[in-house]
Length: 369
Picture 1 (cartoon, rainbow, N blue to C red):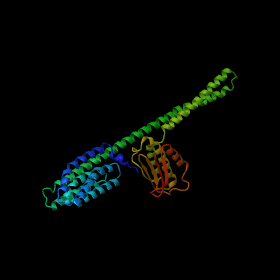
Picture 2 (cartoon, one colour):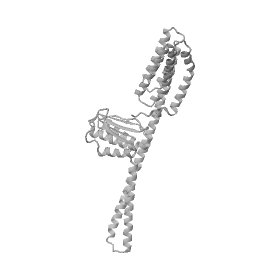
Picture 3 (tube, rainbow, N blue to C red):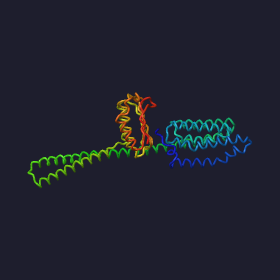
């Protein structure tokens, strides 16, 4: 659930550059493809099927690597499986002449998000099969050209993709550190404001109250009444200022999803619960970070106190926060005051709350906005 939307995945300067390069390479091979399919004496049905298979393969070559770039390795494996299936269909229809598409396949594999060394193994396998195929056909002059092309293009794109992912991760880490530094500074300012101004205003309010009581022993008269009124006003102003300071401090110490994520990790580890938490909160818009922080706090608190779970999973997207566990599951007393507060906050933000059984076998709390 923490994956970005399809539109978010396919937009941006990175995908645009990839689409431009993929489009140019496809255009470069458009004429050889036309000759390969339509200049031979074959039935029209075969030509149409072969053309459709080639179009589908090149469309997948252009789109699927970008779909997988900000998602998990499971999505990458599915994308590669689709690419291999479409390429196998092309080879089945066209024959070994379609092996020229393997450099494209190697580039797409290199750019797809895959587990470590899987892309290396696939690219090596493609190169080895290509070499064996050319040697079996007796094409000694061409036997090493295409395998070398597959290796060079595949490994180049794989290294390029890994560098991009590392750069994105570093930028996300920088954003997280900046947010954490801001949160720490806000907390420091709030603490100092409370300790200094709060103490001083409390003393002023107490002394004003004491002065008012002392004035009760002064003989009645206009001067005393005026002085008593001034002292009462000072006392009221001090109390009002103290309330304002406390409200301001509460705002500075407001709940934030980044801080709550760090607190959740500590709380779950202390309770001996395996924590499956997001590595970043950059996908959460600023306007939802406080709400998601409250949901995260309430959900993790319930997991630690009531679930009896050994595993807790948290997922964050731009519009959803999910907390689930493998504990005892929902019981008859689920709608407590904490969850009632979450419902109110979610309703204020235009969101909905869903609770129930988790896929892990325990309790599930989710908020969608």
